[in-house]
Length: 272
Image (cartoon, rainbow, N blue to C red; front, side):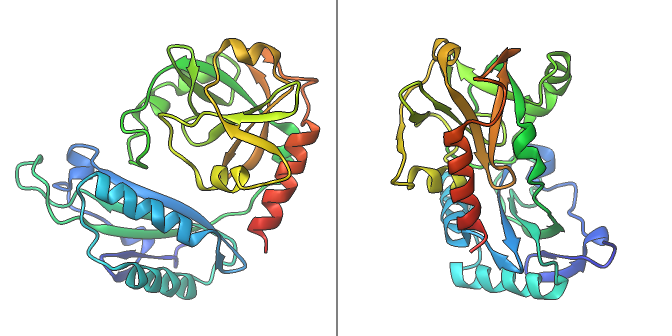
């Protein structure tokens, strides 16, 4: 959409004209954070949770957000009103700022962008295939702009006839590059890693579902050999079944009963 607007440091600008100087630490050193949430019928989904994580990430990176929380929310709603895109994805990015020596912390730049986003419900029935890779993300609890390993390994994913990576740290399952990972055991327990991961907002909502036996627990590569179901969760994927890992079919290769029930619950929460 050529007439879609972005905001840079509080000012509206046409998105296709938006730019930052090359001295920004996000360009020079890959230093920055972001968060991403959806809107449904112009309404932000789980906005407070995303802002909690955004301000937490900034504090952990020693970055100062110039806007108080309510002022930032005001800018977000102004952008939503100006663009008038009912179903969208909104990204809030805080860059390292302009640095004369390309290394020293500076005043961050705040960038807010919005794009049309339509969740494809057909993806649920198809599911995704994962390939495991031994890698522990740096600063995993912070939502940084560093996706170096995931992007570098895209040819590896294709070579293994997979859709995405599943990171493990010396056999301890962690997460996917852009989603959290869950398994369902033969006893109908729903387990997800609780350490050295980015704790997603959709993941948080799943853990709050009281009608399921869900908990955080360490999962090993060996545990994957006998799982009943597996799925990933994220803002853009909601809940998505995993049908294969390292070429091995999970369950019968179709969405499982518990995964489907959790998916339905999360969809209802996001569409309220």
